[in-house]
Length: 152
Image 1 (cartoon, helix red, strand yellow):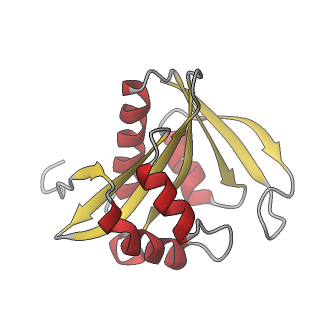
Image 2 (image 1 turned 45 degrees about the vertical axis):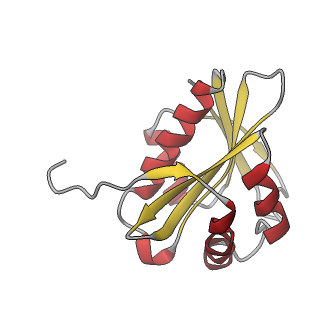
């Protein structure tokens, strides 16, 4: 689109940790990834943390996890800092996560999403994800999750 903001997406690094923790705190009331978990995911080979950066600030991230010997990637988390919402960063990070999964040999991306998160559900469905299940009492607060998947 004309005038669309070009946002670089890169692999997350250790110095992004404070910003990632802040995004978790701002975006999620429960089921937050801990500082320890985020540090772990930044350094292990079976996951990739993708960071969208705007004017030197981490604006959002996507976390994709991989299981050795499996062709299925899992979109573990995607979050956009409140100050940067409404700029299509979720779409950008989702596409970057799919590219990363394909580069690692995955042929299917799966994810779980809170059943009441209409905005996220609309994003996933608009990108070809199909609902394949429901898990009751999935989240800490007892909320259900919808399961989605997409062939890559």
